[in-house]
Every structure is written in C-alpha cells, then in structure tokens.
Image 1 (tube, one colour):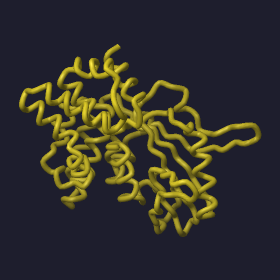
Image 2 (tube, rainbow, N blue to C red; image 1 turned 90 degrees about the horizontal axis):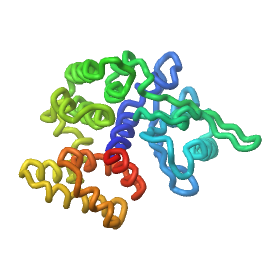
Image 3 (cartoon, rainbow, N blue to C red; image 1 turned 135 degrees about the vertical axis):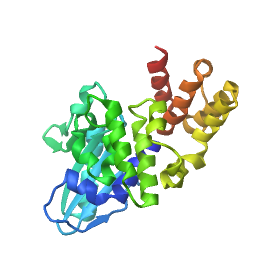
Image 4 (tube, helix red, strand yellow; image 1 turned 120 degrees about the vertical axis):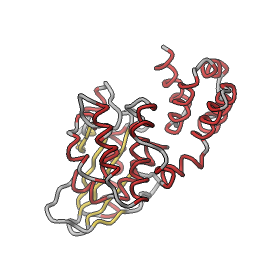
Length: 286
C-alpha cells in the first residue's frame, strides 16, 4: 500500500527523527529498528523502533482511517502485550492519523473493557505545527499533512526543503514519500508542479510503485486518450486486490472520468476489501 509503504520507509530509514519527535529523551540514543513480525500469529505493525539505552520500544501505527477489524484500540492492546512479552522494557505506542477525518473515532486514545484500560498516544497530523516536521529530513513528507491555513505555501515549503537535501538518493526517496503522502490532501496537478518527478525516479519508493505498474498503466491509457484502456486496467487491478466485482460496481467505475480513474488507481493501493471500493465510490458519486 503506497501510504503505508512510504510511512514505514520513513520510520525505518530515519528512526532518530521519529524518536526526537515522539519520544524526546535528551542526548542522542542508539536506535535499533526491530523486525515487525510479532510472536504467535504473524501480525505486522507498521513500524517498531527500539531505544537500547533507554530500554524502550516506540511502536508507531500509521492510519488513514479509524475503522478496522479488529478495532484499532484492541489492536494497540494486542500489540502492547506481544511487544512486552517478546522484548520487555517500556513500550510507548503512537497512532498517527494521516488523513483529516470528521469522526469521534480519531479522538479515541485508549482501549477500555471492564476493568481493563490501555492508553496510547494519538496524533492527528492536520493538527500538528509544521515547523518541527519541516526542520527534520525524515519528517518532511509528513509536513505536507500538517496544520496550515495556506496549503499551497506549505507544499512549497516542503519542496524547498527537499531541494536542500544534498545526497541524491536520499533526496529522491524523501521526494517520493512527500508526493505519495501529499496525495492525501493536494490536487495532483499541484503536486506534480511543486514536487517534480525527474529526481524521484531514483527512489526505492517510486520504483516500488512503478514496478506494480498501477500508475504507469493508467497514465499510459490517459496519454493515448483511451479511457477504455484505463477502465480495463483499473478493473484488472481491483479484481486482483478485492476479488470479482459486482456488475453495478463495474457500471459505476465505467462512468468515472479519466481524472477520477487515475485517483482510483492510486487509492486502490490501500484497499483491503470490496467495502473499501464501495465507500470510495460512494464519496465521489454521491
């Protein structure tokens, strides 16, 4: 999934940046990135970072929506118990909501059931001051989703900061992650204007998406002016990801404009079931 991959890459590539942001401990502390597969059933958390000196684990969960099965609060409790059993020490958990959502679910910061109460930290990126995020290379892509009254200016600030990264490969990776995450908030034309793709082609994140052929296939159809090819391509990718589509869903997809088909081509990277497609279509066709 594009958003998940970008966030996971950032947390594992720049763990010190996330530690400084989410778990300030004073002097720099050696950081070890742990494997994300936990004992018992192979559940995977988005990012785990272990502070050896502080004997602490920072568990970061990136989310674009507050609903899941099992529910997010229960999952956080489950992760906590598994982490505690496997590694010991102190566990600090943070849920980072990427996309602005009007729902009481994004306000929840604990699991409660009878006498059981398990709290965790919740960060809603759209409420975060962008200044700290803009000052850290590893957090720049997240700054695209932070608090602002002037979104275009914020995106320009991110682009300017990315341009100052001297190491070419690192610049390409941060740029790719910035473009992926900015897609949750900004119009694609503006993203392409401010976050140019030429440098990004060297990025492992870009290559990951490119190799799947999702964006390339849709863009190729658009370039050839053949909406039918774009529809066909999206249908194939949806079938692979969520299974066979009901005839009424196929009709709705065929009615989409080329621009909306491109949006769907990117959004389906995050789909886990046909209900995600139904919800996505409902928002755009209502």
